[in-house]
Length: 213
Image (cartoon, rainbow, N blue to C red; front, side):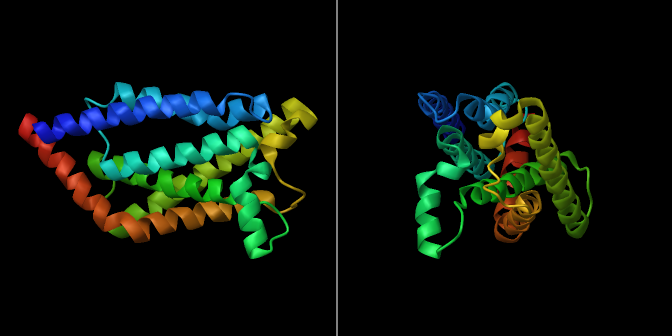
């Protein structure tokens, strides 16, 4: 019981910190429209996680990954992805022709949703077999990535040049394809690195649920 209460208190403190960081990222961002578009997934996901916590608490691993992904989104929203200082440092270090921070964002766009989809599919008993599970997870990630690219296209049509900062292509004609490739790499990396650890945490969540029933 104490462990459960401590976990809940930690998650509440983390959620409060996340809201504070979100507000901080919105103080004089480089482009207000870009900031709003980039942080919208956080604004959408945070209330959902809060209201479903009692009925469907996620694993600690997933909460940590979601928090890290939120930091990536907020940083990209505050500076715009093409101007994030960390990206410039990586660009100089690797002698790249562009700021690669947006590729970090798309890697996370594959990495974190892969774990989200995996957890929902396992706990709901929707998929049988590890290979089929991995296949479905990767398909979901690619669908999310493609949907995001369609959203970017819609923003470009609706906002015209005002969407340039949100698109962040930096003159790369293959930006869309490389974005989806990074999401694919992120999803495969998540499955290879964390599947066993994720399984153990999911088993722990399910055991706690059976005890409380």
